[in-house]
Image (cartoon, rainbow, N blue to C red):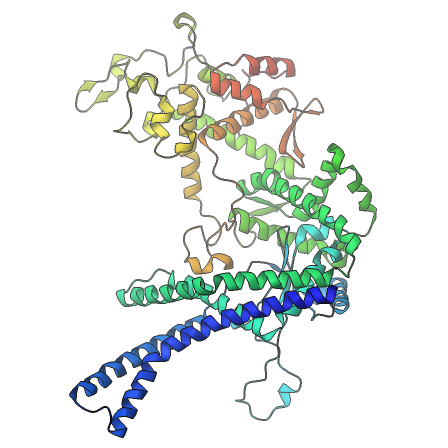
Length: 631
């Protein structure tokens, strides 16, 4: 029954591949129609049937049209054949560095009665697939047939033999899964090399990939009008052909996948059920590790060099906390799949660097401002430096909003932040700050057109307004939030963000400061948006897959105030920075993780109420009036 299923899936895939090739054949047929008409007209003239001035004019017109269409067809066909298909960035694994892994894959292919993959590569993602890299632009030429070197004549090209696709394996699988689980997971993928070797399916795939690459070529910015016109025609033809064969290509791939899955059922079927559970768990742990642990390090110019080893620690911690994952740690006594590599540490470092490049847009290699960091140094090199950098930025922005209050010393303190964000409830008890102190007439701001500004006007009650461009369309309703008026044009999704006027203005200043810093430092060798779309998958526009959208102004303010509190805890209460495998940077206060800080910070930001945060600081023994170290 398995053989019947495999045969049915393969036949369905082949029929769809033939449909794709028929689309190509029809396109070629349409292209040669003017030439065929010209042949008929010339034959009619030669036999004396189609003679006269009208037929002569028709022969000239159709002949010119045929030549133009044939030239255009040849040019388009050349671009489709020569355009470089997209290739996923991966870390190649040579057979010398992983002989056991190659041996396992070849044994698996032999059991499945399919060709073995030509090579193995790793990707920093929880997925596995086959990738055709036979295009000449992707690397060295295809392997030659036996005895090609002995053929007489140096100018004769060696005979090419079919090359199997490359097996791409997600690197987290190698570190988290056991050897048997990895074999069960990649069995359906390896089984796909069988249909890939079918000539019709391979030709259809080459045609579709060529059209996709042609679209990328057509989208490349061109300067000359002739080049832009040619690219427009090229893109229109490629889109037309892709639209005609899109459904057939999708059904062909579904048939290939169905045939591969049916064939792989004969290998480790029972173990595959358990392995699929590990796939979901590995995906959750990998996503958490990247967003909570790796991303803060990347923002600081550090890249964790052992991300794959870190996912094991993260999933082990998840198993300890989550009762649903309790049984997964018992597997750790078995042989991990990373033992199939000769040097797993160097491979882990390479995939970690690639992950930083893909998900954050970091440079392609280490340099002075882009250095690796190990997990032991992470709290000191990343967590503590992140907190102090955010605290320094917060005080710089606060200084730009107005003069420092007289009661606060020149040294940065947490008390200044609390006083600034506290929402006054009574004029008699209102804190004296730059936003509320009466202005001296000598230093009163002047309006070039109208003279001295009214101290009660918007300029006096909106410190930091100079950081945000003035808006001529701002509403004047009494209930209109100042932050909404300042940022509604930039981020309409934040219109409903709660917060006081002071916190909103401070958040706007932080957003502007962070934006300036990010624009001043380019990411990697090629910054995002500076390369043509045709090289997106080859390291052009980075990051390819941003992990998170840009932080909102309120999120930035929350992170900066939390960092300020953590710095005060470290400097005045003996707390230490730490790494939590699931939540990222954390604060250890008296040997325990401080997990209840964020709600109190939000109370200060959203309501202007410092009471909950002050109570927390007092209970923890943190003194907000003491200066903190920013560097």
